[in-house]
Image (tube, rainbow, N blue to C red; front, side, top):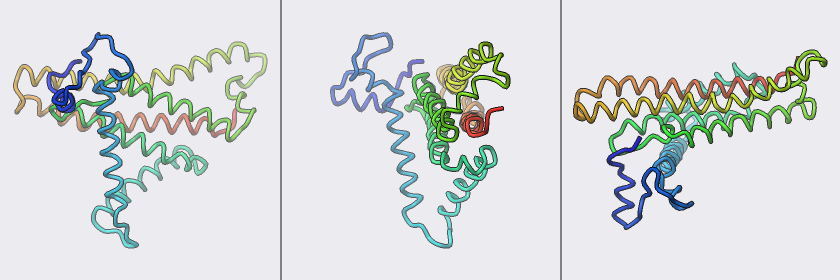
Length: 239
């Protein structure tokens, strides 16, 4: 979906930078100027900025903003340990980073003139590949070469049948994580764009925007929950 107005595009064009249109041939520089890339940097700056503010004045007895951030971080960590067990605690920074990145990305597209990076399949695919890759890293870390047993099934004679199914299943995780997130956020942006175009930017899109606040959180939660479950499956012993 092409956005008629994107603030970063306007700023870059003021400096004489050409932004390639959809379908227009462009090299590496052109890809780096695509909205899903430029707004990914905006999201990263926002998340890093919020993190810096959160840790700027840490006190022994938390108050105000520190109290809120500690509540959020502790809640996410406790929930993750409940899913993966104590052994999965070391993956908490990755899960928290993905969660905050996806959440801020989902919400960014609701602001006129901004673009949600998760409304582009390239962004969601990159996040999904990180999760699936780290799943196998965890499996090898905890089980070594025996991790292959996760793909062989409970009975050795069934290995020729189980192995292809397991490989396809792990590849499907990439599609499941990426397409689910992309489809929901892209659909939300598409509906918002249609409402803005047909009914103006005031009252008509508001119900959809309130729904977007809920669905944006739910999609970030589902992505992180599935990632935790994949990590937990890699940690546990094969049966």
